[in-house]
Each structure stands twice: as structure tokens, then as C-alpha cells.
Length: 354
Image (tube, rainbow, N blue to C red):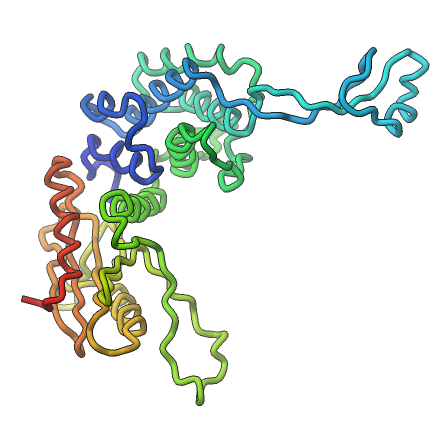
């Protein structure tokens, strides 16, 4: 599956849910605008988001600095002062904190903006808009995008608006595949399937958290239901972690999100079936999670719909466990897409398969 198979109007909504920013300033305007390519959408998110952040004030933090000063500021570094023989010149090596914008968050923003300007297949007017943002980031250090430690970027009330912006930046950097040709980096693709797959999983999880928090949506671990008395080498059992688990009373629904170019496999005789490994996986999750063996745990493979002739449409009870496979059409208008997501919740109803 390529990014062109997803309605661009829904990509922003997925991003907003995935990074918990559904109420960011300008979100409605971005959704309403037409985009032909994902790269233009991501660039526009940065243009609007960083522009709004500039008006509110860029994120600042206390950063430790060390410098030779004529007067005392902060703490005197005696060892370095002596080593540098600064006293003979009447200067002291001091360590002090500055409240400034040269933070890791702003460095990430600046590096991706420059990347888009230099190498992105972005409309000229959006590149111009990105260039107009750079003067506001003049005091921010430009770093290599590959050096950014995304997991180390923390969020709190003062910089919560950065969550969506830096989520977009991370998606851009991880989705770009640079190749060196005579020393010039070129972009072979924009958003990789792997990056979109992670976005798809996170979008589903955050959608249910936003609209059905009472179902306790989470990426839960599933323990193997083995016989402890006769077990050996249990540390060799692979970990089982769901993409999304929903709970209603004693009922649980395990959702395994799949973002694949081919949502069905074709056998030797041309028969289209659900991928064996996917079906075995979700069945293993559900059977091991259902320790009471009363059918209260169900498993659902939720594929991003492709343009293939045959699509997964499975709903079956296997050894007392309801297992299914269906698609989510990301090309549909948002109202239709949301209706499909709401229909998934019905799997938690007490009744089994109709």
C-alpha cells in the first residue's frame, strides 16, 4: 500500500488522533483544505502549527552554558578557570542557566523545516511559507535530522502543542529514504509503509481512547496460558502484545491492526484467503487471553482497505472464540470512516456471532 491509497483529507485526522492534538489551532482549516499529496499536507501542518506557536511563543527551557566572563554569573568552575589561566586575563569560567529557545524541540522543528525546503516535493508557495518561519528560529541550532532522539523529547503543559508538530516531523524523517548519488541526497519515497503502519496502529488506539475511554483502550500484553506444573524453558516463549485491547465488563476485544499492500493471500489454485500468520496470531492472542475459556475474548484483524478485488470479510467462531477479519476504508469521508470504527465496538456486545 502506498500513501496515495489513503484519502489525504484523512491523513491529518489520523495524525491528530495519533498525537493527541485534535483541538490544535487551525485543525479545522487544514482538514477542509484540499491536498493532492501527503507531503503538501505535512508541510501545511508545520506552516500553520509553527506559525501559531510563534505567536504564542516558542518553547523555552533552561539550558546550562559555560563561558569565560568578566563578572561572576552562576557557579564559578574553579578547575577550568585555573586550567585556562583565565584569572590572568581577569576572566572567570562560569556555568549558568539561560532561559532560551535553543531546545531539542525547536532544533527538531528547524531541521525538518530545512529538510522540506531543500529536498521536499512541496508546492513552491508552501516552501516560501516555511522559509518565512526560519528567522524566528535563527537562534536555534540546526542539527542533522538523523541525530534527533524522538523518544527523549518530553511533553508537559507548557509544550503540549508541540506533540502533533514533532509527531509530524518524526513521520517525515522516518518516512524519507535518502540515497547518495554523487554526493547529493535524493528522496526515493515520502512516507514508508512501515511509518504508515505505526501511524495506523497509533491512530486506532488513540481514536478509541478519545471516544471510548470507558473501554480502557490499550496496547496490552497477553500472557501465555501454559501449564506451570509441567512447563520448562518458558523464557523462550515470545512476548505477545496487542495493538489495541478494548474491555467492557468481562468481555474483551483484541484488535490487530494491519497495514499491508496485500490484505489477502493467494493460494496455489488462485484462492484468496486471510493471511495464515495473521489469523494464527490473533487466534493465539484471544485463546491465551481467554483463561476462563468462556468465549469472552474475541479477536479482530483490522486491515487498512486496499484496491484489491477481494477484501477480508471474515466472522467465525473457532473452538468457542469469535475471530474476524475486516477492513477500514481510509479513502472514505471521515463520517463514514468513523461509522466503521464505531461498528467495531459492537464486537464487545454479549451476543456472539449473528
